[in-house]
Length: 101
Image 1 (spheres, one colour):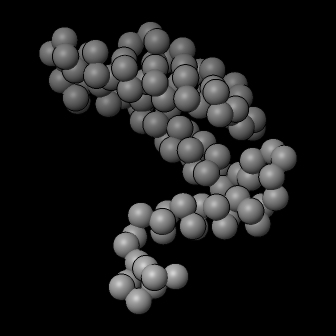
Image 2 (image 1 turned 120 degrees about the vertical axis):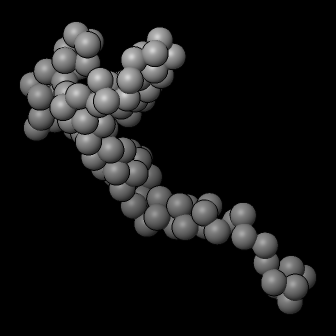
């Protein structure tokens, strides 16, 4: 699993730097695709769950969380928070007495 080791080394070199959204998306896609391809080839999950893979997944989870709370450039933090709150609540049906408003 040379690819996993190389990605892990690359992330370790950049430990103090946050990933850009594009880097995060690319790495997430690459790691998920590699894992599923190896699984389809019949490699056991025990062999795939190496320390390097676990370290990469922890870093990607940390980066995902950091990007979720990082405000977008050019928008106010208040607007971002309100947009997130209203966006997540918009799928909830309104009670009958509010639907007429």
